[in-house]
Length: 110
Length: 115
Image (cartoon, rainbow over all chains, first blue to last red; front, side, top):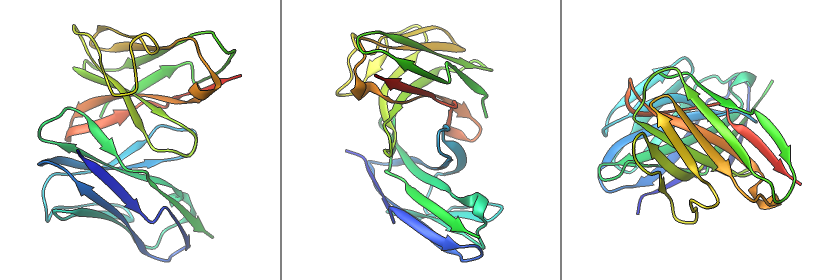
């Protein structure tokens, strides 16, 4: 059974203080790993899709990386508007469904 | 990406009643998904709805409680039947996009409170 865990559960940063969020996964053949951002009361907003180990994607202050067991979402010099819950999900080669992790709640203080 | 809208955006309902949530997509898609997100929790898949076939429900969710319709390639509905306070959640519709491949896009959600 596919499993996704995320750490830390919550993270508080000062503006400009870079850090990383972790997503560890167990899957029978990775079809894709996905990062989303979710603001309170809204649907998840797509950030990145990664398909194979070694792949990296960047968007503004965010950079996602992938290994065979985990993915990291690196946040460089975060701003208060980066405060949100960050969700990781996986899809395996055998099913149609996506399995979501519990998320990391990020707070960036001015 | 796909643009997805949901109606209603929020509702307050009485115990024992039913609510139908609509999901509209701006392009034709094969697969649509319905999720539930309880307060402070991550997303739990309710069912997958493909046009022209019966919805496939996940463990713990049954058709009598959450009937789904998928009449065409741009629209789906989820009904939450005989509601109880435990059904208070955000209900999210999503679709599988083609660029990037395998990626899922979400609607804004329907926030349901059952009294």
